[in-house]
Image (cartoon, rainbow, N blue to C red):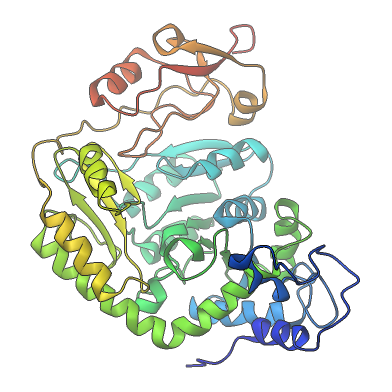
Length: 445
């Protein structure tokens, strides 16, 4: 363990300690006396200088810090991202695909994937997830389903899946990678919610070709911080070139430094604290009606609790100053990390224990079949549009993504026909229902 290795933080702190005359961006010049909550970070907020390095040049202390993160995930290369996993997803699919290609896409992917399809003019073939009726969520991606789709669509060379899901469901990445590679393809994993897994001994992403994780979601790192990780086929210059297309040319040194010191701390005390949290979550899953390993392989620290009315439970908890990550008709989702103290965890346990949990609301219907794709995502998202009440949109082509939570699976994706059965499904689940949607005018769709 290199508990004290934080090359970027050390370089910036050393430069700030010299009280340099800052005749460069940013305009605050390292001083924010009028904003005490921000003032401590301002001295480290530099720009591209000889001592600080340049993110998209791949040199200096930034590259040294990235290389240490690559070791954590057992992949050869890493690029810091200051635009969240969204920047990483766009970059990864740019690296993996050529414009106009078909790509096999997990239907439960984040909206950043759907936006990337439009930006890169890709043609999706969607991969539905199995429905776990008992839990009211979708399960892991079966490798045999990927094998069947790649056999059916021989021209597809890129597969994009999400693991873990919002609810903590893990897919078998090594098995999926074996299938994809056997077909000569590239596996892209949106692992945004799994940045902490290596520190719990879960080697989740090392067989992926390209993977994205959001440090800010589950690690003690600042908002928007994320990592793009890449396997052997991709040189660091490839990551920098594609990443610079979607990222600012003035990336925040404060955000990048937070990635550096986060990893340094996680390799010591942070890892031990995360293991403590994982043990507490294991006990909570036993004590409460919650998703557990009997349903599917899970993130060891994601707590998804079953409740008859997640929205009512959310209101009750917020009245006590407790804010969950996600509430649905039958679930509450709590993100627990190494920064939750034993006192925090006890407070959460007491509050959850006082709620009505379990119940019949988990009998959510499975998502309907994927509607017919009429236009490409690019044509639908970037073309003319008009807003119609949902019932009047039947038969029209959708120009947006309609994805109620749970299960978070798009009922209609951009470019797909709005069908009676999809509107009926939205009526049946009875929550997060859109009253009007953006559609493509008839002469264009």
